[in-house]
Length: 306
Image (tube, rainbow, N blue to C red; front, side, top):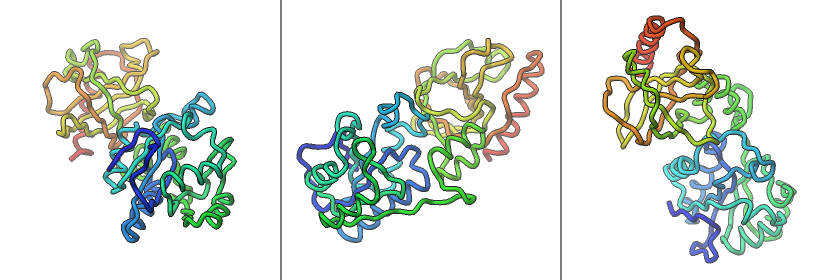
């Protein structure tokens, strides 16, 4: 997949089918739109193109973010593996926010990017003050001759699949439903940093992890996970929480114990895939109680990860 990190001044492709959006999570609803672009472009000989944003537009518009489900690198990787040919990662504030909706479609999408077909969801809004909608796109489609595809949402248990719904499940600790809506395991990339090494003393050494601040972590608790490091995959269990037994309860900690693994991995990059939630975080009266619980957690994690 060819990647542009801004809207190019000169675009080398002609006859483009495209979609545009944040696509945070690239969940089943997003996949329906993206696959529509890819499949149609293969049949018609057009070039498939997706436009997305490195920084969530909501952060620019309201100075807050809802908690990212993917980093931009993860998003690009998922979209590339789906078969998209071209991806433009644009700066919403610098390149899009102040365009009037009709001007953006005509000057950017049609004149510059050679758009011939456009795929959007039913709730798509765009342009300055988000005044562009499906009705405007239908009018522009008739005027400028591009084909508009309005893609119906995907439902799960009588609810529309959305990034908002996935965030709700993650915050509830329902990793199983979040994974179903994503159609893959929820994954967080992190760097191994130094900790207090207390896990070694009790026989369960953990890698303490530093994650990107804007990435949403699931609800506190213990999870069975798979961990990828240098193209190798390992089984493990992760604790997310405030270490009520030993800590001061103020700082959220993200740590992983790799099963059957004893190497030093400081400063290494890991990707942690959440498979299933084992239990809530809880406090223990002493090390013996904690060790007993960790043995039970390990047994459950091994059963889950068979």
